Amino acid sequence: MAVWDKKILWAVMLVLTDALGQRVNYPDPVCGVKGSTVTLPCSFTPLKSVVVNGREVLIEIIRVVWCKNHELCVFTTPSVYDSESNNNDPRYRYLGDKKGDCTLQISDLQEEDNANFRFRMEANEPRASFTNRSGVRVTVVDGAQMEIRSSRHDGEFKRGESVTLNCSSPMCTIHQLEVTWFRDGFALSESGPTVHLRYLTAKDSGNYSCGLKKNERTLSVPYSLHVEEGGGGSLHLIVRLMVGGLLVLFAVIVVVCVIKRTAKKVEDSVIYSSGAIYSTGLRQTTP
Ligand SMILES: *[C@@H]1O[C@H](CO)[C@@H](O)[C@H](O)[C@H]1NC(C)=O
Ligand SMILES: *[C@@H]1O[C@H](CO)[C@@H](O)[C@H](O)[C@H]1NC(C)=O
Ligand SMILES: *[C@@H]1O[C@H](CO)[C@@H](O)[C@H](O)[C@H]1NC(C)=O
Image (cartoon, rainbow, N blue to C red):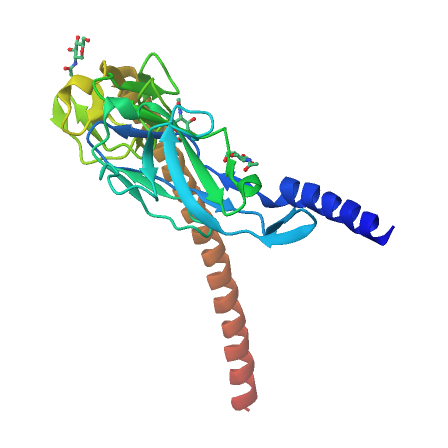
């Protein structure tokens, strides 16, 4: 009876640890330019132990494998990295360990890396070996033309407005790509995927394009931006300034007049009262 209880308990615990303990976490989809290096940060948690014939076996990871486009990374699947192999392709560097870090770095990215990469851990006890099938999607961008996205499609702006331009590849939503921006064919200093243009003036008008660094084929279709400085607009401004100036002048005149009047009254009363004091003083001293 006690033995049965123990077995059931172990079974329940095994189910629980299976559900809770065993994990592999992949990063979000990764995009990279052909020839560049990308890193796939990855972490895993093996089971602590499993029960074999009523006996608890502590789990140790003895082999780690990365493969591409295979559901499970098992058997004869060609792997891109295998801790048990002596001739791994040096383009795939395992930066992880057998404890919890499964980070993989891919250098000199090639078209063949356009794939789903999966990680497998193999344990001293086969039941504790595991592959998370979701994997990490790697996209290789090469000659794909970049696109400029803006909140305003017509590109018509008024002086003082601002705009954000995004440069991205239609193949993936990317932020780590290095891009070059151009206005009318001249390179701008910005190198991020996004440029903010604030307080637009006529000088910002022009045809904007962007592309991946050192890859002219990726240059986007130009985005034509036009800032309306506006002849009518500046005339309007002059009129407003003049009206404003006149109002200020008028106000100043009024204030000056009021001050002068009050000053005169004060002066009069001072003269009057000092005269009174003087006369009283006189009266007091004369007798
Ligand atoms: C498998 O990987 C995905 C992506 O990282 C993650 O959301 C999920 O929790 C993982 N599942 C397991 C059982 O490790
Ligand atoms: C441009 O990118 C920013 C930040 O990545 C985002 O918030 C914004 O919605 C994007 N705008 C457009 C028009 O795609
Ligand atoms: C921008 O391109 C348009 C045609 O797409 C052209 O008419 C215009 O002159 C260009 N503007 C500049 C400043 O080069």
